[in-house]
Image (cartoon, rainbow, N blue to C red; front, side, top):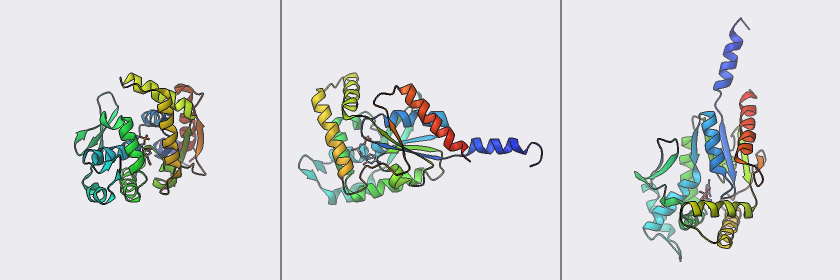
Length: 243
Ligand code: DC
């Protein structure tokens, strides 16, 4: 290699853009870790759970999802009307935008989480959202979190992470978040909700939550945010530098 060319080789290594897929159970800090890694890498972050939540909100507001069930015929009709984007805020955080309206605050309730868990069992909803997610990741340089990113959306992702923590730890974290938002709920109720969603996410017929064979396991039950970040950054750097 002529003199100076090794510099270019190093630069091109730095510029290698990869796809990072982060999957795992609800409330195990996936989005915190995905956001943090995206900032570190200078990548785009996509929260796919927010997309299922936005579909649920849209359908709940129109009476398509009720306690009694889901009107799948009407949901299929309205799917093409649902436009979901993300708006970056001045502080760097992202808000979910549904047909031009910022719905970030409204999609985070337990009610919408429950609706999202239900719509996410429907094949045509998944296919429509997966297609949009794959389009968002076409250029790589993306960190996407969800349940099926490493298995279905980006099976060829260079770095796959499967995040987990015990149901009790996740329920405690969720309780704290709800309290901070001024909408506290009893721990037992939150724990039951976490368990129910785990069961539904991992037992549905369509793309159930499972660890991809080549995903690295990150159990953060006893890790601080800093320790978790350090692990992820190291995995990311190793993957990018592998060539
Ligand atoms: O991660 P979350 O709690 O915001 O996700 C909301 C619901 O959407 C959850 O029940 C699982 C579902 N989901 C999914 O099935 N596939 C994804 N890629 C992301 C979320």
